[in-house]
Amino acid sequence: MTKNKKTFWENYRFSIMLLSSIVLGSILGGVLKEKASILKPFGDLFINAMFTIVVPLVFVTISSSIANMSNMKRLGNILKSLFLVFFSTGLVASLIIIVLVLLFPPAQGIELNLPPAEAIKPFQTGNQIVAALTVTDFPQLISRSNMLPLIIFSIVFGLCVNMVGEKGKIIANGLEVLASVFLKMINLLMYYAPIGLGAYFGALVGEYGQQLLSSYARAMLIYYPLCIAYLLLAFPAYAYIAAGVRGVKALKYVISPAITAVATQSSIATLPVNLEACENIGVPKD
Image (cartoon, rainbow, N blue to C red):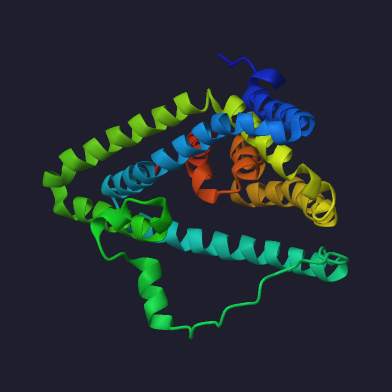
């Protein structure tokens, strides 16, 4: 029995709703101007909810995936792939933006009145590395301000649960259930996303609209077309390298995380939506 093909609307319904809400919110913000601040609480509700859920979500998803791994060599392969992809794609993006900025300086003709710079403290490599990778107390770990220490803790915790063996199965199964619960919370929260992101954009445009049309216009005309071109050209290339035609087709699930990233300007806020996209694509949990 062959499955019925989904229509364009069924495939992209949520992404179209998100884009439409952002466009409508931006138009409303431009019309209302300073009065658009009344929309801000509705946008903040969505952003704050995302930030609230991201810390426990990161902990349970990472620790549960490692705790339930049957072969630790797989973890090593995943980490190798992660660093390779992160470095190579980051290098390509960096080179492209450096070349473009050299050819078309985005700050040309803009004068900024900046306060005098404070004296720069000497850089202490050892202390900086320790501060980046660890925290001084457990409560500090449960904060989106310390995501890297939280991720490292989650990996180590998952490894220890896995190493305990049969006795750790209860914890591993519990973590897996918790991960499913938090992902379900994300699913529920995304019903509010069109309203939240629309209101958030409306408030932003109302507050900074004049600056966007004057001081930042040149930078926007350079940066956003480049981002769109990179999205349309580089992403399909990466997807094809990863999984061929099936990978390119799966890019439809990347639209929601991309829109959330543009709207919130926060990679942390985008994490929950990325996890949902991975689940839709069929990426294994670990």
